[in-house]
Length: 230
Image (cartoon, rainbow, N blue to C red):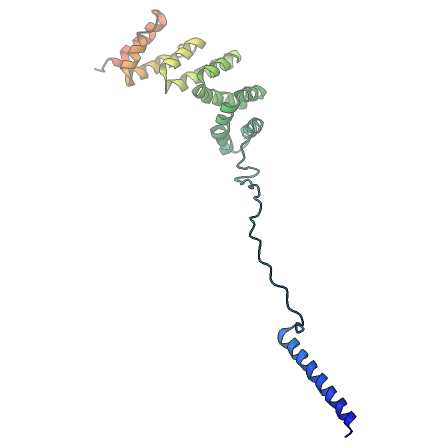
């Protein structure tokens, strides 16, 4: 064989060998052999990420932990009033109404005034009376005095019965201011229970009352409560 032919054969064999090595590397790694050094892997930055504002938590349909504005509270209460779900109304009265009375009682007054005469208005008015007279008796009494005669009498009786549990003396004062509780015997009954449970307190109050038919009426009930049954 000629020398030139031998050189050509050797070159071909060498090329095939190099190609075979690349082919083997392709099969083994699934990618062409790397011919350049890979870029070093970048480490995550040590700088803290900017804080993101918290996402309000949702506890019910459309509800969040963000405080509700007075107009939102009033809207939710009015929605509960006409709801067929009694639990919704109970929640509105136990959670939303006290908050609105404390933050913006004027909104409560306007809300009651918006209701048409009927059961819904009566239910709301009575609940407002019960809660408000416990939170701020004087302001609640002023509001009751602005109502029409029928509503005034009804709310005054509610206020009297509500106050009887914590301050019978205030209950009597409310009853006498609005002229309720004596015609149906409810005020006398209230005073009799008071004298039976706290006789010394009832007698001390009685001593501060002016002479007159109304005082004598209640004195008789107090004496009756203090007299032991035969």
